[in-house]
Length: 152
Image 1 (cartoon, rainbow, N blue to C red):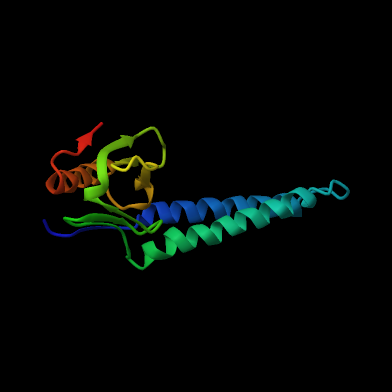
Image 2 (cartoon, rainbow, N blue to C red; image 1 turned 60 degrees about the vertical axis):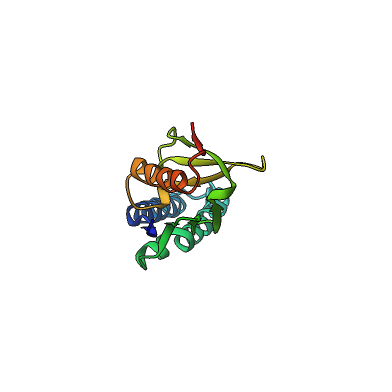
């Protein structure tokens, strides 16, 4: 099988960046329009700091790689590489694959490992493409490498 690459989701990158920026602007607006004596700034300044750190982190792990067109997920005949959180999953170590479609921000794909170690999870919200297509492609690669892998 050839190597399949999925890029970072530019839509998710823009959404997260705009959302966090709006939260910061709302907090600044609350501080600026606050009547004298209420001291709302004591609550809002820590909120602004925390959300600003979240924004910088989100831009680093998702938005900037999406703008640069970097690869978020790479599949080949031997392994899956999830560059968002630097995870490498070898098909020879996988016992089964499952999915959790309950989230609003994409699916979670769950890999059960042969050595009974902790399940490995990857999230499709950072990956450009349809969740179902990504899951089906992962399953195709896993089945090609090891036909005995079971799907839940």
